[in-house]
Length: 359
Image (cartoon, rainbow, N blue to C red; front, top):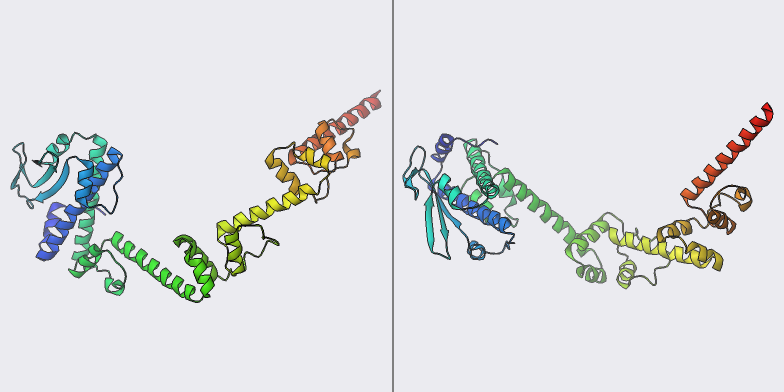
């Protein structure tokens, strides 16, 4: 959206009630103060708690704060900068720790603060975006584009939004998206509550101990009919007791639980496969990296690519020959090495045969 000209802003403002004008101006200043505080906090590397009041934020920052922005009206300059220049827009800043107040125009405002140009740009960018929100409201008001908020007043909406609706001002697109997000969350919570009520007392007690995100995922899995999705492990008796309880209650596993259980089951399978090896095979397998050991153990019961006799004459690493002799599977790179050695051997034989033919 393109910002309205000063004339256009004035023209629409004249169509508003005194209450609507007061609301818009009050919100404008409040939002600009908030943006100022957060921009300044970011510059200083400080975290502001959203639950803090503006006064608490100002005390923490101990710097020049935006107190008010006065607008004298279109083509009017009733205010004065401390430098003596007549102003339409007057920025009033104060420093509580010094009890100092300054009345500045835009130019003096920038130079007086002694902030880096990047921070000044960020402050002005924030002010501009807030002015755009005001203009969006004015344009929608002029075109009578009102969102049907009355259908959502049962939701826990921010007071700013309900107040804005009650005095007859349209909502911005961002506010509408916020309302719709709240509505989506509300409907989902209602659905989750219904699903929860369908569970047994014991299942409810178990789920109630989970954090909110895990509880939500688990209930949605139940809705999707995935309560049997965990039944993929034969024996989980020595696994995590909480998860065992979850399975016994016929509750589905969360995605991360499913992955963890599958990894655990695979580790147990590899341990079992390792124990089934001869002591010599075990010693040989342990000479590989942990990742290579896992790869070898996963292939223990698969058919072997080569017999010792088929590679005995090839020029390959003696370790590979011993591995094959021990009837252990091979890694991919070892198979490639055998194939290369075999191809070279064939080429040498063919080359010898050609020389014999010509002789």
